[in-house]
Image (cartoon, rainbow, N blue to C red; front, top):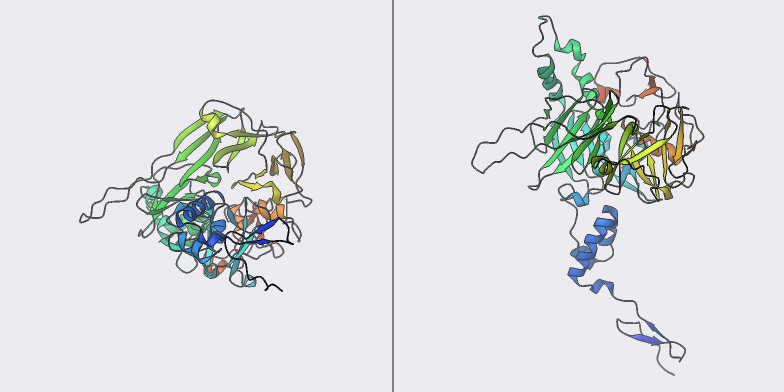
Length: 474
């Protein structure tokens, strides 16, 4: 009797049942040439994103050695930024860093259904999350207001100055020349802590220069200015100019795009990062460059699009607004078309759903079986409910069952509620579900994130305050 066949080896075939069919052995992927492995790794990083790249490196030691490790360079190389990943808002008081999460946080992939990742982030225990530019986390430390930029998957960190200097810079810009001899800086700001929590209502953009400098721009809606600093700077520099509606700024490729509307006109402006200052070794450190003034790239009539917001879809910027003041139809236009003087409504965004708000999102439709493809989820301004609008048919329908006017939706929430909460940073970073007619508050972490100034107007059930009572609290 013939001896039992040994294990298959590369290049060896096994004849089955004495017939002519042969089962070829599986190829030895670990022996793939290093140049080809690096080429595939680059394609995975470009098309699949950061997490797919990490999975690629985990296949075998050979592939891991051939593909560059992101650790230590995840902030400096924009290819490693997890752009399509968003910190998941747990809701119902479970803010990022809540003890119930055990030092972990969940992230979800906007471009693929069912992709959740739970990662350890002990930094959230004593940091407030301000924003998530390019999927990175912009944090502010509770103790000293220092700002840090954190990569959530590698935990690479860049250090930025604290935000205390913003109050004094703003004082110099706006109140230095006051004619009132009894003017007191503290009387206007109430306290430095109030200014700081005002500054937390922001939109951030991250720019990586050719020399490897990491620059962050903060669009500070509450004061209508933009501040910037590079990693390692001693203080933030605030813009000398002011601008409205910075809460709807869109960070894109290290720049800020802002849409404003007034006097029947809609403007889209571009805010570039500060230009690098030439410096040679041996010379004194150069002074900090000023932030360029916004450049208007598009101006159109409000009759073309009404109250739009900006959103990125497949590396293209879209304007999402209404057709007119009746709010009867949603209109989506490409910024590139408007620049060329064309007004061509977008009627299909296959396999995508747009969530329109102060921070608009583009989400894979496979996440949401109850929402049709080529739909926009937004607050229906005419009927006051969260609705979905189908761009192909031009029809409205409810996006969810719960009414979001006066109080958060009851638990358990649908995924639509969680995703729409991401459209408002002030609910998203506090563990509160989005609702209208209320402003979110840091009640659980108030003493460490607001200082000693107390306000007694708390709703003990929702953790929210009424916007008509205290419109200036965030």
